[in-house]
Amino acid sequence: MSSATSRRNSSRGTRASFECHVRRRGSSCSYVSSGAPTEDFAVSLSQPMFAIALRFLLAIDLWLSKRLGVCACEESPWGSIRPLVRLVEFSGHVIPWLIGTLYTLLRGETAAEQEVMLNLALALLLDLLLVRVVKTLVRRRRPAQNRSDILSTFFVERYSFPSGHATRAAMCARFFLAQLVDTASMRVLVVGWAVLVSLSRLLLARHYVTDVGFGLAMGYCQYSLVERLWVTWDCLQDVLLMRLRERLNRAYGGLWMAAWKH
Image (cartoon, rainbow, N blue to C red):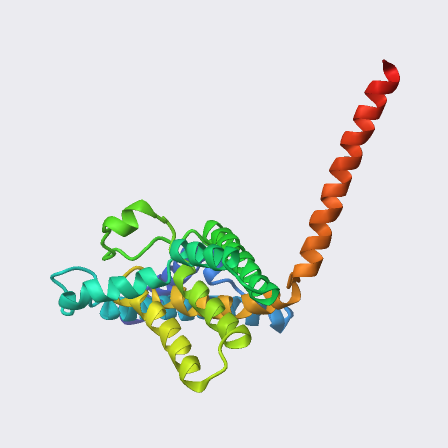
């Protein structure tokens, strides 16, 4: 008799603990009746799996980025080649690219050369704008092992996603391959430069792997937009002449009205 009573008490305790556990979990463990649609139950199960998969991918991204940051500082395993990697990094910075593009544009001997350099300058400005918008929307912090130096102190960027160097390297490489490069050796050199610039961001621990990967894809797609918005030299001259004529007409009209009033 006592054994039967103890079994009933234990079963009640088990049921009560199960109900309390279900109430504690709330929305994460909801009861589904037999008449409920199966789609809602499938969606509730897929959400935790998606979150788990996303966390797993982010963990791999963090682990791989930390392993690749072998030039983060002088004490790193490959700290001796850090100056060389920083030189490669500087080759993908926007400041030398803008200065070189504007200088070539002003020194261009033919209209075709000036047209190409003009569109390259517009492409660089477009890249700056799009990268800034995405970084402001995502607001991902830079890796913890990123070490500031003299160059990065003058051009501080708080956010990491995407890598502006990677987008610029991919866009400029595709631009050069389509407009300026016509030999196989130069094609290999341009593609190799884009790969090294992107890799330097990981070796110096400036960005995560996903930042660089998304930046390369984004820069590759940006050139397609540049091709669609290509500005010809004749079209630019027509626009400038039209604006100049409008301003001259307004100035002439104002002078004529002032003379008529007098």
